[in-house]
Length: 465
Image: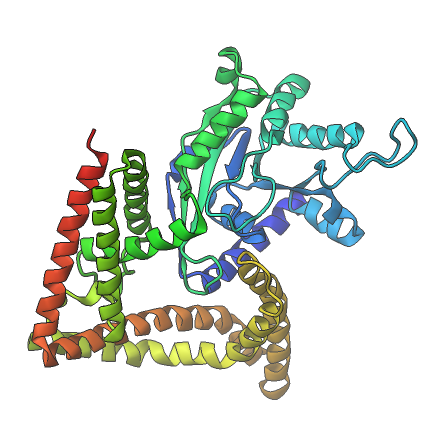
């Protein structure tokens, strides 16, 4: 186990770097709800394949172990690596079927009970050692706009650990993984940690497998976004992003745009209002809501036509703020641009090659990030080895060591400075546009205020009893 802990410790920061190269930010709320020690199931939703496990492993402040389908352990070398880093093989009914049914013929609908029991024993043994185990109770990664029905495996494993291994003080902590646009590089992630379930207390209250599964489902629904259809998800998120930008004050360039948590709160409020409107079945109110949505879309279309960001509608276009902005950004460019340029020079080829290969024949939205991260990890390490070897041959070992040490900070600086530069360009574009056309800014400010007012009024009407 010591070797496994060492390997986990080595891989953990590398995974963190890889995630933050692909995604702009990972924000966590409620992290204090995860116990620092003792047996824990971390039950997360599963929207983004392998990336989900990487995100949970990156943000949880204690070592976690994962469950994975046993079929990926078929390769001996892979199985050894997975075991070392703490992956527990889990044989699911969809993966493992009985080989010796009573009629002597394979039955694809009948799992092998012995193999299932062995998996449950492995999980129970890990919990008895006080492990934190990550599990995805939906059972599969998917692109659906809502939580899939939960399998009963989590509840059955919790019961088995208590009965067969005497595990006590076991908690199930719901974790919601919310991606701004999971397939898009430099988008954002919000991780919401919900209220834990205490298994001992629930057993004393007479809970069973079905009721525990239902409770986990309710807790996961509370920390995730769930829409009726993909169309609703797209509509509400477009309107929600625009509204959140209008509701938030203008933010400094060095800060992020509207925090993802604030955007998602607005989206959830819109969803609640929409559900309430549907329940009321009031044609007049429905028509007002449709008109409001179209008004927001028209507002966004006006901004897009002028290449403006909604966060920049209220910027100060007086000369003094403009000069301060120009001096500050020029100074930062002089300091940070050379480091970012070095990162771009050393990483453009491996990163572009990775993306080109990873995006071939993509069939679902949960493939681009997973493929890019896995393939990129290999390609970038190979590129580092080749580049460092070349530097050593040309300039010697000490220069090669300095070169190697510079690579990750330089690439990270390039990405962060690139994000800032894009926001600075957008802010500058808005500044000069409104300097040339003050009437446009006043028109947009008035329309934004009207949209905010109408949104509040419709929310009150929809939720009124």
